Image 1 (cartoon, rainbow, N blue to C red):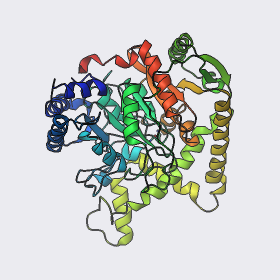
Image 2: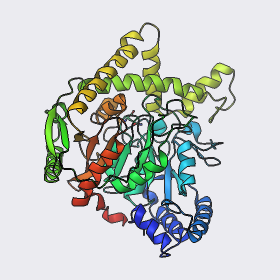
Image 3: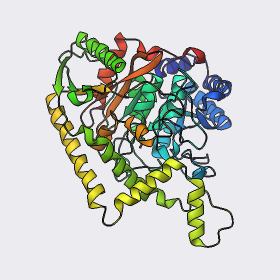
Length: 483
Ligand code: GLN
């Protein structure tokens, strides 16, 4: 059961091959069997079985939706009413959310059965899931490797079949990068396509929620349930939601693919280049043509992102002061001591580094030199994309510079870690949608292909991914030790 896609599971439930309670119990047993993957922070077994019972009643009554009764899990950044929502930080280790994020509400309405909350980098800051207060999640293709971050637990849960699908968030690559390193399909939608309400903020102008699943088709089903305007999020887009399955099977004849020359310049790992060339050859067979595009400002994406993201996080994380949320130090002497020790004791090293960098970049005297400058660079990068996307239908690139690296390998060198985001970060600065799909293996480890499209063109991206998945089987490969 655990290897099936959403449509297969929905069919199995409706035709009475198994009940939602059986399916849920099966996933709960698998979660217990593989604790070494450290994918989950919290398992909500009782609640899951109750939701499954309710789903079975709906299925029997013939009122079920496609997602009704299918077990899934949320990244622990989404507020879940009555359930611990930690953001993988000591700061929120004792935080029980008083309300649901809109994403959680929407999936609940669609009949989702939540198995629990998934591991991640602390406050979504990281590219390897190693900054989690609960320890690193492990890559099921090789447990000595990182799963990628920050939505590492989500990617592990889907790849090792500890959930039928998962939610993630992507500020600079956190859905796409772990999807690529774990061999699953992950979509970062257009900024504003999915509500951010109840999603703990990292960098508000970049954060976007999205689905992580086994195929482009599953991803389309999930986006359908998650997308839409939300009056509770002032940056949510008041744009009609497309029918993401309607055109998913359209032939790709005449599709033009842009290949940014800057992405393929020296520096691209030779094995990764081969994976990409093979994928592009496949697209040519499917009727697509390719064209070189240029994005001269791409090289500025990492420095601009780390100034903007750090600046925004320093403001967002100021609410964690030991008074209103989460951790409070023991026996504070006065208010200053309370702030200093609560924050000092509860935030991890990477979070503190970002707060320091962000506060510095925003301080009087440095604001113009760093923050304002970074915002200008951001505009130039968006313009590069707009120009390229006026010439081609989609842009393709690698997702990561290399396959999964070893646990501990980059932890001592933050800059080295930041460079792992080189192919994903610019897309967030521009606010564009992008998808990561499995496109092959390098020494037994998955490698991803990134497909970038214009604003609100998610349906097109899913179509481009789906056709490829119909003719190649990369997305169906599963890690042997966990099947
Ligand atoms: N690795 C990037 C960072 O640490 C992106 C993380 C994310 O997308 N949440 O900021």
